[in-house]
Length: 343
Image 1 (tube, rainbow, N blue to C red):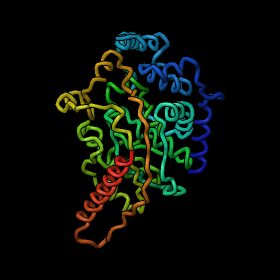
Image 2 (image 1 turned 90 degrees about the vertical axis):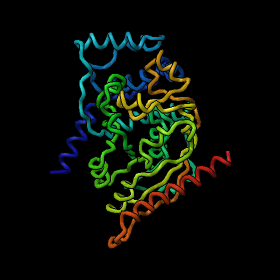
Image 3 (image 1 turned 180 degrees about the horizontal axis):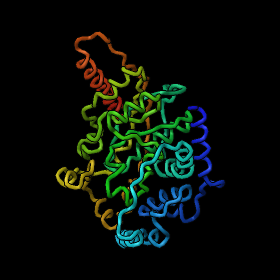
Image 4 (image 1 turned 45 degrees about the vertical axis):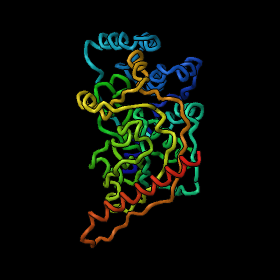
């Protein structure tokens, strides 16, 4: 029964995929090198594979490209939808679409813009399940996560699913930028204990930021200074006997440089962080740049696997879990310092 249901679901997903994949046109290459156009790339790709009557249209895409035009595009879309917001729908992970997005959109961005590369790949295991733990920074769209997911997929064929803040699934600003199901269909898992634990129990390969939101929110002055690690990933790694693969990213701090987090304003608008930097003036003129980031070279250094098998009868189990998380933090901080000293 389960196998038949899975097969039917896979066939249904495949029926939705057009026979011809998405190919970059001259307009797409223009959008790639013109920062306000990145949002167009993501939405055009989604609309190629999904019916999205609430999505943007060509007139609104054209408005994205002129100063202040995004506000007119939002007004046009709002009126077109009958003075309402886009529908908020819940989607399920679609590995077929993740693969298409990875090959057709992420590939040129990672190769030609971020020049992403994996190093020390001899430390990669042949298969999962895994918790890939990485220092997450940049105070912008999670390009360090997306790039690593793409590179791991290329190196091992893995379907990597990132753990993301619930705000990134449902915030009113996000659903105006991107389709409401976009994050879930691409494999995003809510950073909530129940969702995290369910994904771990299913044996998935999860991309996790042990610092939580403290990593990207720490600001430019504390770049490459790891913040306190959460302990949930150590607990779940131990409970389900799933190893942790530590990864150090160098270059992510420059995705949105010179930033200061406006904490009070960030809480007011209910975003995980709200950066202030010289780039924010460009963002006010071109809000579609919300998913763009500065061109930087993203390098990933793979560390050996870490095991979180703790003594089940320890009376100080909570202390042992905390100590192991902090030990891993110190180990990664030492590696970051070494790598920075070599470049």
